[in-house]
Length: 442
Image 1: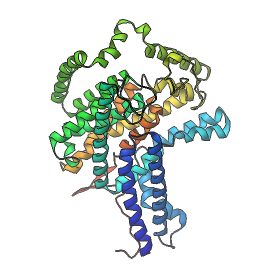
Image 2: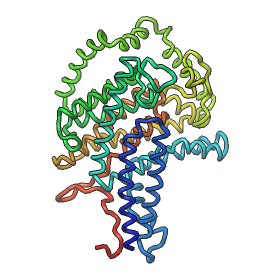
Image 3: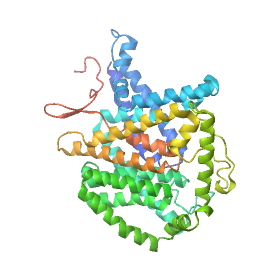
Image 4: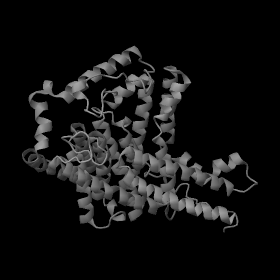
């Protein structure tokens, strides 16, 4: 049993390192993220196995599995039911449109959801791990923001086949880069405005610089949908902090907007065509085409859609990225894409998932806890997640960011930081709150 306990301690350390490495890898080409995530799945499975082995022979295998801390943490993850409902609907709509093979293939496209449960189980065991991961995630987000600024201002894309006008970060795609930076920028801003940053990086000036660098990533990604999303997300965060903060942030946007308009060329390049000749804007016109096609598909299959993987390929050469894509294979809108591929049933499941995320983050921000720094951080994470969800939802009116791999892998990682907390008489404890301990270890 001592050997089991030692192995368990080793897996605990491995789990911590995997999540810390993932906090960097998530900004890199998606292959790196999945290599680290697969390693995390292996470590998680090993941990569950050791917890079952440590339960003792007097406990049935089924009971040992259900009662092991890692499985309890997964079951108690607050978004587990909405995710399960959405996954079942994906399976059903896929099966109805192509049999069990298609149903299973559709579910496999949701594999990024596994990250949420693995990360949640790890964070629920260690608040310090969550703090360390936050430090790494936001610090490397600042690096990605600085790199994106250099890319856009100097038109410097040394590792990419296509020379974008916009910043594309370390992943080579402006939309995916913008989506990730929306999440980290909202998280950093929420921690800064609420004071929750003190548990991550104690110096306000240093954290302010870090926040600006994360925001710069969204800014220089130059995705108009992301600009609109982050604008709304930032205002929501400020409003929830206080009306005074909302006023200050709103007023600060006026000089920032004017300075940007006259000093950063990409701002006028991206906005002027929409104001002067919207009919000639390729991005806008491509969206009109795919939105109309999505509605046509939905009208033909209103209840269950055509299956999540079966959105029609649209040949719009002027909207494709040379060397990167040939067809448009999504609706450029989260809600229309789900409606076309999964019908009304799928849209209801998607809305349930979206509203569950919003309610969880709002409830976390408004949770009645102590004034201790750790509890302030907990609430601030909820505020940051709320801002990120709002930002992605608004941007998702013009992009299918819900289905973008890089954005999913960042979004669900950050959402896993919102832990279930229960107030006790003298302190605040995590649930499930029990670490593994071999029998006789007491």
